[in-house]
Image 1 (cartoon, rainbow, N blue to C red):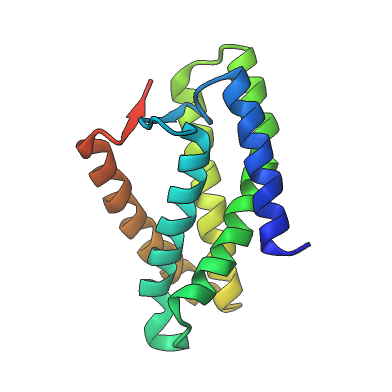
Image 2: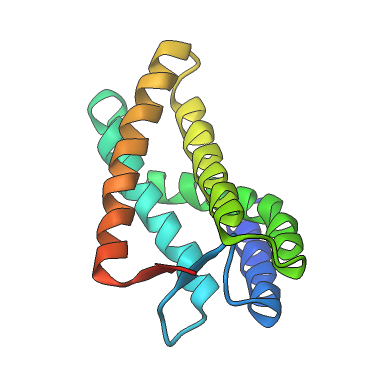
Length: 151
């Protein structure tokens, strides 16, 4: 499948998610538009920006290549975590546990992203640390701005 097909599948699953619950793994986006779709697009953009900044010096890929790569990676992990989110919401699992799964979801995306650019375990760890720090800063900024709220 192409990254666009995975994006369509992930978007469809997020539409189902909206019908069942307004949060994905305990995270809810404040938006007048389809909240989960906005979350998907924001994550793709943020990971693309983060990977572009992290890997540009060594690999010289342009932003659009990172956008395509991260569309693929975020969509795949969103599809894989969709059933987990539905089960956690239907069982009314504690929000802190859901947030733990959201952090795991973000971490898997970062690990997969790092593995695309290097097979060297030291470099993967270095890229993972750089991506983690940049994503924490970006997400915390969104949280402070009120764009992300945790129930």
